[in-house]
Amino acid sequence: MSFCGQCATPMSPAMINGKERPRCPACGFVLWRNPAPVGMALIEHDGELVLIRRREAPLAGFWAPPAGYVECGESVPDAVMREAEEECGLRIELQGLLGVHSRADVDVLIIAYAAHSIGGALCAGDDASDARLFAPDMLPRQPPPHDGTVTDLWFHGVVSTTLRDWRPTHA
Ligand SMILES: [Zn+2]
Image 1: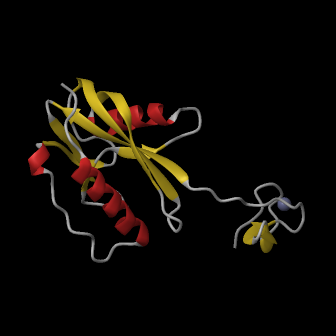
Image 2: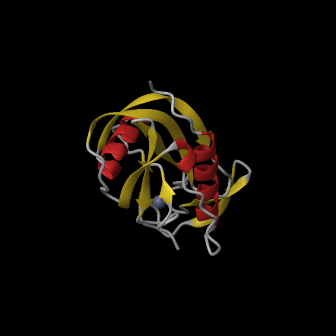
Image 3: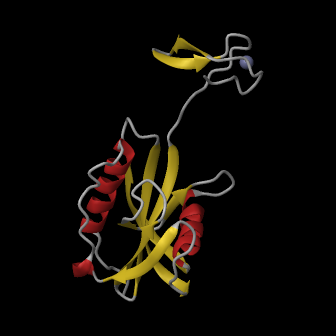
């Protein structure tokens, strides 16, 4: 059971704008749920791609580009640059948007950018057990997790297609 964020009364389901949503019977507060934005960076460093080995779900133990939640008080590009430095130790410059990935039954959406390093030193930071460079023809081939959640499998698909399409572009 969830409780009203305004007055702490137990919420109950109500039909609002054609969909069942939690509503507070006392004060009328409606809980609108929105996917949380996650920024991701495909970072080129000396012609190679920076990947981290994820420590946490989703896809714990898999190689993926640095990524993390956008927080209030920062733009999406700000969040991508902050996460890159926290997770792999590199300061980066963004080159452009690569794509936006979302799915109806997953409560995050991913905004992926092409980027290149402009400073710092590669090391595994927050949420990463390892950080390495991969040549374009040596990117890790990772089968989907056989016991993964919907979010694991979706994230695996996003990472796989994003890596497949990545090319070094920064001269
Ligand atoms: Zn209430």
